[in-house]
Amino acid sequence: MRALLRPARQETYEKVFRAVHTGLVTNVLLAVACAPLLAALAIVRDPLASWPFFAVLSSLCAPALTGAFRCFAELGEGSAAVFRPFWDGYRRAAGRSLIVWAVGAAAVSVLAVDAVAVSRTAWGPALAPFFATAAALVVAAVVATLALLAEQRDGSVRLRDLVRPCLYLVARRWYLAAANVVVLGLAVAVILLKPVIGVLLLCSPLLYLVWATTRFVLAPVLPSGTAART
Image (cartoon, rainbow, N blue to C red; front, side, top):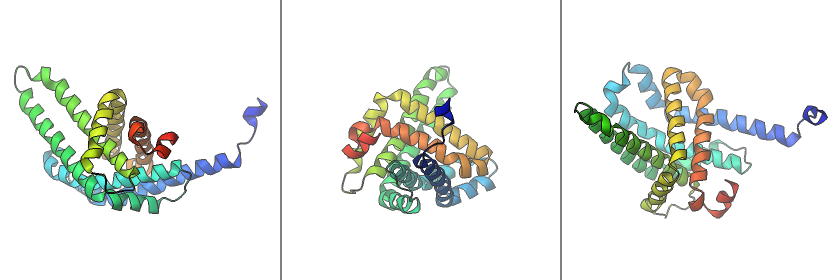
């Protein structure tokens, strides 16, 4: 009982404060980076009716996510900086993250359109698990590639050399990838229902959970130093 009532060490308070500070500032930076998308969601009453427009506009999330993942990586290394890691992750991986996101958005869009078309047939329900699994795999692979891009300090690595191991490792640990998709779905749902709470409070904790799980999945291909801290 005495051990439980003992005050926490100063280092513990510093870690907690650093984590809270990083989460709040990262939320603000994400909101700024994705401001056009958030504004469009606030203006349009039925986003699903204009899904091609939002699929294109969602590409703004790609470099923003790499910036957030870079902040989380710096937090794990004991750094309290937020703006600089976010900007470094955003700037370094902007081009390649946009390509990955565009390919993933196109693949998910095609799967969604095919699923709607097939659902009107007699054997459509039997193919529903295939479309859902394929879409979840694409989403998980895109997030894994963005997380790996956030770890890369050398831009000379070819993009396909990053995507291939992500696809393999995500499929290998599909249960963790499925959990990530569920958490991402929860984050999107919260942002759509309660934009202020979702963006300014809950976004970073949910994304951190996704990043930590993804980093564990990608441990075999992470640099030796970062893999050891995963």
